[in-house]
Amino acid sequence: MSELSLIAQELVVIGQGRMLAAGSVEDVVGSVAPTVTRVVTADAGTLATLLEGPGVSVTLVDGETLDVQGRTAREVGAVAAAQGVTLYELSTHRLSLEEAFMRITRSSVEYGIHQEVAA
Image (cartoon, rainbow, N blue to C red; front, side, top):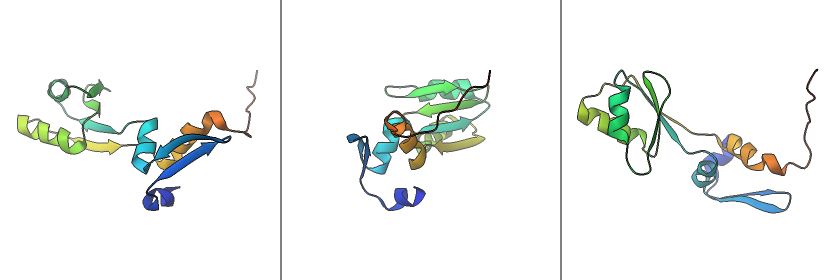
Protein backbone atom coordinates (compact mmCIF):
# COMPACT_ATOMS: atom_id res chain seq x y z
CA MET A 1 0.00 0.00 0.00
CA SER A 2 2.94 2.35 0.37
CA GLU A 3 3.15 2.58 -3.43
CA LEU A 4 -0.55 3.38 -3.60
CA SER A 5 -0.15 6.23 -1.14
CA LEU A 6 2.47 7.77 -3.45
CA ILE A 7 0.37 7.72 -6.63
CA ALA A 8 -3.27 7.87 -5.51
CA GLN A 9 -5.07 11.20 -5.58
CA GLU A 10 -8.42 9.99 -4.25
CA LEU A 11 -9.31 6.81 -2.35
CA VAL A 12 -12.53 4.96 -1.68
CA VAL A 13 -12.51 2.23 0.99
CA ILE A 14 -15.39 -0.24 0.77
CA GLY A 15 -16.15 -2.98 3.28
CA GLN A 16 -19.03 -5.47 3.03
CA GLY A 17 -20.70 -3.36 0.33
CA ARG A 18 -20.57 -0.09 2.30
CA MET A 19 -18.38 2.93 1.69
CA LEU A 20 -16.24 3.28 4.82
CA ALA A 21 -14.06 6.23 3.79
CA ALA A 22 -13.42 8.46 0.81
CA GLY A 23 -11.11 11.34 0.03
CA SER A 24 -7.45 12.11 -0.49
CA VAL A 25 -4.81 9.92 1.13
CA GLU A 26 -4.26 12.66 3.74
CA ASP A 27 -8.01 12.89 4.47
CA VAL A 28 -8.49 9.13 4.79
CA VAL A 29 -5.44 8.63 7.02
CA GLY A 30 -6.31 11.75 9.04
CA SER A 31 -9.86 10.51 9.63
CA VAL A 32 -8.48 7.56 11.60
CA ALA A 33 -5.69 9.25 13.53
CA PRO A 34 -4.52 12.84 13.33
CA THR A 35 -0.91 13.70 12.64
CA VAL A 36 1.14 14.11 15.81
CA THR A 37 4.19 16.34 16.15
CA ARG A 38 6.65 14.87 18.66
CA VAL A 39 8.84 17.40 20.48
CA VAL A 40 11.66 16.73 22.94
CA THR A 41 12.96 19.66 24.97
CA ALA A 42 14.20 20.36 28.48
CA ASP A 43 11.55 23.14 28.61
CA ALA A 44 8.52 20.90 27.91
CA GLY A 45 6.21 22.66 30.36
CA THR A 46 7.03 26.11 29.00
CA LEU A 47 6.68 25.01 25.39
CA ALA A 48 3.37 23.25 26.12
CA THR A 49 1.96 26.52 27.46
CA LEU A 50 3.24 28.45 24.43
CA LEU A 51 1.67 25.97 21.99
CA GLU A 52 -1.79 25.88 23.56
CA GLY A 53 -4.66 27.38 21.64
CA PRO A 54 -7.93 26.59 19.88
CA GLY A 55 -7.78 23.25 18.07
CA VAL A 56 -4.43 22.34 19.63
CA SER A 57 -3.92 19.37 21.94
CA VAL A 58 -0.62 19.07 23.83
CA THR A 59 0.13 15.87 25.76
CA LEU A 60 3.11 15.56 28.10
CA VAL A 61 4.51 12.09 27.40
CA ASP A 62 7.33 12.33 29.93
CA GLY A 63 9.37 15.11 31.52
CA GLU A 64 10.90 16.21 28.20
CA THR A 65 8.55 14.88 25.51
CA LEU A 66 5.37 16.44 24.12
CA ASP A 67 2.92 15.09 21.55
CA VAL A 68 1.21 17.97 19.77
CA GLN A 69 -1.90 17.72 17.60
CA GLY A 70 -3.18 20.72 15.70
CA ARG A 71 0.21 22.30 14.93
CA THR A 72 2.73 21.29 12.28
CA ALA A 73 6.39 20.66 13.03
CA ARG A 74 7.18 23.93 11.26
CA GLU A 75 4.78 25.85 13.53
CA VAL A 76 6.16 24.19 16.66
CA GLY A 77 9.72 24.96 15.59
CA ALA A 78 8.86 28.60 14.88
CA VAL A 79 7.21 29.07 18.30
CA ALA A 80 10.18 27.43 20.05
CA ALA A 81 12.71 29.53 18.13
CA ALA A 82 10.83 32.77 18.81
CA GLN A 83 10.90 32.05 22.55
CA GLY A 84 14.46 30.69 22.68
CA VAL A 85 13.40 27.14 23.58
CA THR A 86 16.02 24.57 22.56
CA LEU A 87 14.62 21.48 20.82
CA TYR A 88 16.37 18.10 20.95
CA GLU A 89 13.88 16.39 18.64
CA LEU A 90 11.10 17.59 16.34
CA SER A 91 9.35 15.01 14.19
CA THR A 92 6.03 14.27 12.58
CA HIS A 93 4.24 10.96 13.17
CA ARG A 94 1.28 9.73 11.19
CA LEU A 95 -0.20 6.37 10.35
CA SER A 96 0.74 4.72 7.09
CA LEU A 97 -2.03 4.12 4.57
CA GLU A 98 -1.89 0.40 5.42
CA GLU A 99 -2.34 1.06 9.16
CA ALA A 100 -5.22 3.44 8.44
CA PHE A 101 -6.83 0.90 6.09
CA MET A 102 -6.62 -1.83 8.73
CA ARG A 103 -8.25 0.43 11.33
CA ILE A 104 -10.99 1.56 8.96
CA THR A 105 -11.87 -1.97 7.86
CA ARG A 106 -11.43 -3.87 11.14
CA SER A 107 -15.16 -3.95 11.91
CA SER A 108 -16.02 -4.85 8.31
CA VAL A 109 -13.91 -7.97 7.95
CA GLU A 110 -15.91 -10.78 6.43
CA TYR A 111 -13.33 -13.50 6.99
CA GLY A 112 -10.66 -13.30 9.66
CA ILE A 113 -8.52 -15.23 12.06
CA HIS A 114 -9.89 -15.76 15.54
CA GLN A 115 -7.21 -16.26 18.15
CA GLU A 116 -8.01 -18.52 21.06
CA VAL A 117 -6.85 -17.49 24.49
CA ALA A 118 -4.96 -20.17 26.39
CA ALA A 119 -6.34 -20.96 29.82
